[in-house]
Structure formats: C-alpha cells, structure tokens
Image (cartoon, rainbow, N blue to C red; front, side, top):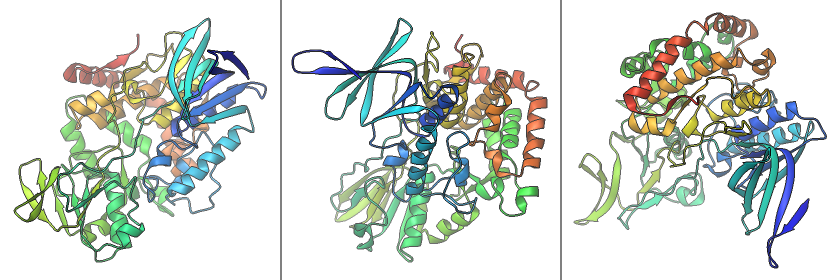
Length: 490
C-alpha cells in the first residue's frame, strides 16, 4: 500500500486493484464470484462494505428471519452449501451469514481478495482509464481505491425498520430489527401484540409469536393485504419434484405472455388463483414473497383479529388507548400492548438515479433505480459476466426505475418486473456462453430434477426470441402509461 500526504495531520490511504466491489450482500458476493472467474491469481479484487462482515441486509435484519426459498438456491454462482440439511430446509439468519463467509473463502481460493469492512463509499470518478473510489471508515480515515473496474453492489439498500412513532405513552412501540420477539422482554410480558404490516416480515413475526407463545393474543393490521407465491406449488418435495409443481421460469414466461402493460388486475387474479396463497380477506399487494400452506394455516389459526387498514397513530384519550387508522376508524387496545413495526423494507429510499453501466463501461451499478432483472442477486451475477465479456454496452437491455413505478402503481409493478426480466434474459442468453447459465446457482428451476429442467430450458431457447417483441411492447406501454424510466440506455 502507498500513502499520499493530504496535510500534516492526516493521510489518505491509496490502494490499487483490478476490480473494486462495493457491497458484500448477495448482489456483491455474486459479482465477486463472477469477477474471480475472469481474473488470474496474480490479480486483485478489493471488497468494501459499510458493515463489519459480509451478508448485506442479513447482518441487520431480525434474528428469526429465514430464507423464503430452499437454502441451496440462495448462493453465489455455483458455490454449494455445507449445511448438511434437507434440500427443502429454510436456512436461519446465522446459517445464511455463515454461508456468506463460506462463499468468500471459496472465491479467495481463486483470486486475491482484500476485504475492507466498516468502510463506506463516498464518491467515485473516472479518468485516464481508471476509476478512483473514495471511501471513509467509521473512525474517520479516508481511503482511495484505484481500480480498472468498479462494481457498486448497493442492491436494494435495505436498512433496519425503526419503531413506529406514536403518541401514546401507554403502549410499547418496537421494531423486530431491534427487539427480538423471542427475547426476555417479550417473554416476560403477557400483553397483546399488534403486528403492523402484511408482508413477509409480518408473516415471520406473527408465526414466531404464535408458535413461541401459544395462547397469547396476537393481532394483525394488514394494510390492503398481501398475497404470496405458494411455496408448496413452486417447490414440491419428495417424488412430486418429478411430476408436480411448476418451474419458476415457466411461470415467468406465462406472466410475460399474459401481461400487456394495461391488464395487471386480470393478471393478478390469474396468478393469485393459480400460484398464490394469502391470509387476509383481501390481498392486493405482491412482491415476490413465498409462503407455505402450513405457515399460512398456523398464522390464521393463531391470530386473534385481522384489521384491513393502515396504522396512523396510537393515542391516549378519555382514559383509553386507541389505535387510529388511515380510514379514520379507531380500535381501543389494552394498555401495555406491543406494536411491532413490520412494514416493508424494499424500495423505500430516495437514491439518485444512476445508469446500470457508465458511459465508459468501467462502472457497473446494481440498484433499483436502474433495475434490469427482478432480483439484485441476478443482476450481480449476469451483468458482471456481461461486464467482463465486454458486452454490457452492446445489448439493448431495458432498465426500469423500480421505486418510481411501485410508487405509481403497486398493482402493475410485479408484472412489469417479470416482463423486464424475461426480456433482458432473452438478450443475455444469446450473448454469453452456456456455462454462465449452467453455473447459476440462483436458478430456482434447479429445484427440479435435471430432465424436467432440460425440458424447460429447451422450451425457453426455442421461444425466447419469438416473445421478445411482445415483452418490449409491454415495457414501452408501461413507460408511456405511468411516465417512468423504462427503456434501453441508448
């Protein structure tokens, strides 16, 4: 390492490398995996993350979180898990974080990686064929990384939920990210719990409370309701893997065929009826979550009350404590009740727009303001391949301002994301070696035996070009209809 004096009191650390990856969540670790496949042992990657260990949002999130999908399908590249559990097992937070460490160890067997945890990206600029990345540490030190390529894998930029701000002094407002539902404080209390939210965090929290404390009063304020993909339908177990269920690629293909940019209500009805499961009497939201029928039944049987509304406040008045809802109605609750903020994490930030690749082709940005695939893990994997193959600027991939569209139409959002994914994958598959797809451990179709996967792969290869015009027209329709950024960079 070298130093360049900035003043008599401070110095700026300068590090040089071939690739700098900022972000050690699932997107960054997939980018790291791919980069290691193109570099030699003598070359160097610098990995930077603001947290103190790899894992991204998994470092911060609530302690009882589990994977949505079978654990083997959440990885970097083709790195296998070492857990030794049944293939359908949903890994816990600690097990996921251990796998992140394992992925880094595997990558470091192929290429030199220097890790800088506890460092935050401040800025970057390009000049003279190099990218200068300025980072600061938690104790105020400054480091400049000079790299040939920069991969900014901020992903969804998930941050922990704060407790809801409420007026009442007679109830406890908490967040599961800072208050363990299985901890001593919750265990020592018999007061009712009001879970606020209808998504996966709310389902995890309600399920944990119901199973940990049988007979305790647990209530759900579910907003407008959420439906989930039925895990039993997408990932059947035992012999049903050979003949039951539906591979995810086939579902995405059918969604892309049905959605035309205007008919999200009809598509949602079909998808919810065919592949969905839901707890609430109405379920208008969908954001790629998974829930099993068993989990659904356990939660439904254990809930005391479900309210389809949004919490605005909890107030003390006339000797009572009331939950006040957006509709204007109120619900009197017991003093000492717990209010647990399980509202959504995704797409909440106001990050500035950045194209997924810079004009020079040296900087790849993985974040939802220029989304190219449905999950940032896939973006980290596939677009890093395109980056190193020098093809990322040649393909007319569509990018979508995902937060803007979700703000304007939650109903159209998931199906637009599906169309975006299928359109861009149809371009990528024609531009990368077959091995890129064979080594993609994120492919949810891997749940099924190889003969079933090969049938689906063959079908996709034979039809992907044929459906591209329809997908492009759908995305163009969404752009015009909602006035959102949705189209090729050039």
